[in-house]
Image (cartoon, rainbow, N blue to C red):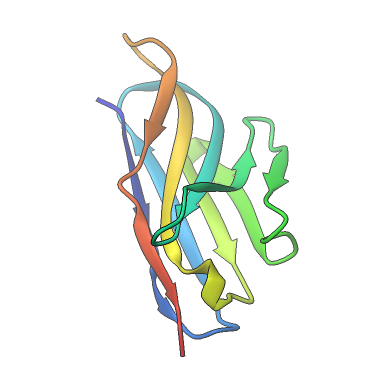
Length: 120
């Protein structure tokens, strides 16, 4: 059974920083692209950033220059460093990963989400 577990969310003031983590567990053969998505209340889920197994990154225009995605392949963990946070960054942040697990077909997995609230 493959699981993704996010951590690091919370309440932060505008201009502050948070670091999210997403840890994959289970009998994993290989993790391909990983990504962070967010969904604000009343809005559709949107892509925040992705990172390939080779380390290539992609960011939504709204977070470029403020957020940094990274991964530690040895730990099957992905991170999102969020700086200069704005109230409009408030959302539930979820991680997604394209994983080939031992004994299973390659597929997309989602974490349960972690709340990030930016407010004074």
